[in-house]
Length: 419
Image (cartoon, rainbow, N blue to C red):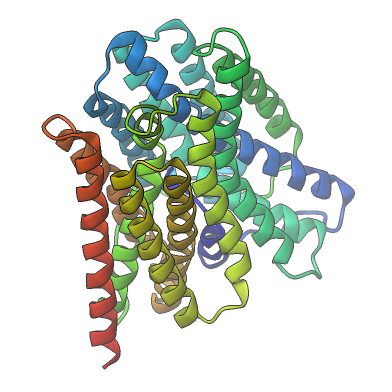
């Protein structure tokens, strides 16, 4: 969710972007623009998670299986990956607004599709378009926030930017599930009202982007287009592998709680409330965003170990909850796993960004994000396949066991690297 999608991205953009100075600094206009783009960022990422609490409704209405839900979810991640590779870097020379406006248009088209074509083909196409839009928005909006912050407060540090970008990212993802769940619970037409609300918010976002100043000056000679290349750089390949594997597991946790977890809560745990379905996903993202902001004072080593241990502990609690069918335990485990996933991903981005040479950072970090989004697709898709042959509780137990084994392998590999 995209990739997800965190305060780690503030670290990414700090090393990836060298924004050209705007013509005027310290202006109130750039301060207003900063908050407008932050709001657009929240809305666009929140829209990407609107379907999460609605999947149980689609399953009951159209007879979708858990495997079908994972297919719909995986298509979104594929769209994000394609967009990151083809367009995630273009705003560096084309301009931030020129990328944000078509990206928001893709999300608007997706919202219309959700409303007009609620059958499975329409859902798949809408989710794919949403992924394309999010892949364009994530890096572009983060860079835009950094540049607007610098233009508004040229002598200040980056603390405001880092906090706001983190809150907009994971906070937006969590807000989408919570708002959609509440609307589905209390408003009429639960499979339509959330999309109508976000369609209006997305239209207002287009107006906001059109009104803010551009921060990129187009080069005199436009560079030749090429897709974003992937590079694994740096002398310590094991450190890169540890960081990439950690990102993989972090996104797998986020993928679980935005795809099958709401259905599991409604079915296996016998709590079908739509607001609860949204709250389940929200807790995971909120915990990830909060711990990312709170981990700023930790050393890189402390951050890595904290994320690893917290995610492992949370998965153990989730596994226990599946066996005793405890909703409270499941939510607590999800929040703890989400907190660990947020810190672990931030740690991985920091390691890779610091290890790569300046001219290789973009390509190296692109490789990390690609592996992270594979984590968003692969394990969750495997979980969906497993539910076709074994009970959901058994499949979820296998899922947590796989991730725990992977986390143990990461710990061993990291210890080997340091020995």
